[in-house]
Image (cartoon, rainbow, N blue to C red; front, side):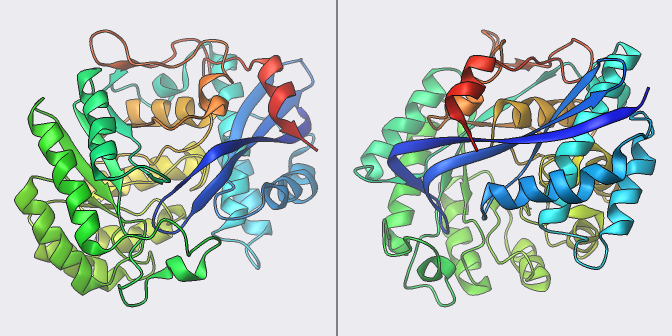
Length: 392
């Protein structure tokens, strides 16, 4: 079997009412979907993250830089192809957009390998479980969503069966070095630290009434002082974990925060590759490790990150915030791990997640999410959804 082509396409959804985290103001969300075609007609599907930049850049790298390296190669030699792409781009890659582009290709290759072997990917990777505990990931800033509204939102998640829910914090202009003011639309939806604490407190009260737990995500927006101060207040309220409190490169600072707090520090989704996560893990800058297979090198690299976390006694909770392909891929990754945690399930309106797959991934009546058990990723794309949201 040989690779005859590697294709990528951009899907885009525009919000009527934008949502925001500490740094990003989302007027639209994009997904870069990858397809690898073989000479026997077998097709692999993947996704490459394009967070923080135009999806056209990621698509260009896939189509014009990485794809030519793979034509004519055996798609089952995944480790070999990963290293070819990594080595040939080392002078301008190693992290960032190159590894994000590689991720979608890697996922598509594992999809082909699973279809060839007749096994779902999570079983190819070791097969630890066939079901996952989900958490509702939402609680974004949005026009008209005050502290009462966000508490009502998370209360709905708990009533529907979720045991955990995560909300956004950190869009605080008074915090020194806060990056929000440098970002697009950084003057919108701003909150004080006191207002964020009010949001957290009301969400925690909503959680307590159902036995649920709240996590907070600062998206790299705080200093050590602010993270520790806010973290201690969050501990009093019963917050389950604090996610990405500092800039991803402030590893020593994150280690200070992790050491100062009794609750776990989770992160850093915006780190890429095993070498970046090695430093986070070895310096105890995190308690919970959060790579994303569509962002941090695909299955091939993320399984190495997970092994490093395992060797240091840390659980892995993947970041999941993109299309249905991303959700399926991260589910397979998480289900293969003995040190796997809980599954992030984005609850924002997003048809590229809910309408892209022929069989939608949902929480079952028993509260678990079950892994697609067909070979490979176990998913099929809906062509009508692709046609509706595809852009040139």
